[in-house]
Image 1 (cartoon, helix red, strand yellow):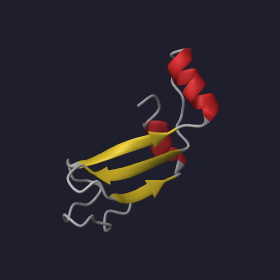
Image 2 (spheres, helix red, strand yellow):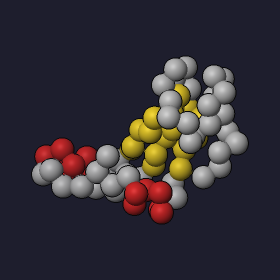
Image 3 (cartoon, helix red, strand yellow):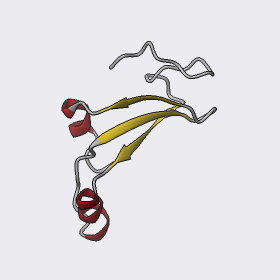
Length: 70
């Protein structure tokens, strides 16, 4: 991951104040919410919990696999 991107607060994606938001396809949401099965997200966004600025998005399969079901 590229940790040089920072929010206006000065935090990069490795800082504890940065939160992740997983984005699922419609089928992924169906599996996750209705059936209770883990689904792989199609994108992960990184947001600052202080200023709520989105500082990074990733579609990397390796990172997406680490966030299955979150």
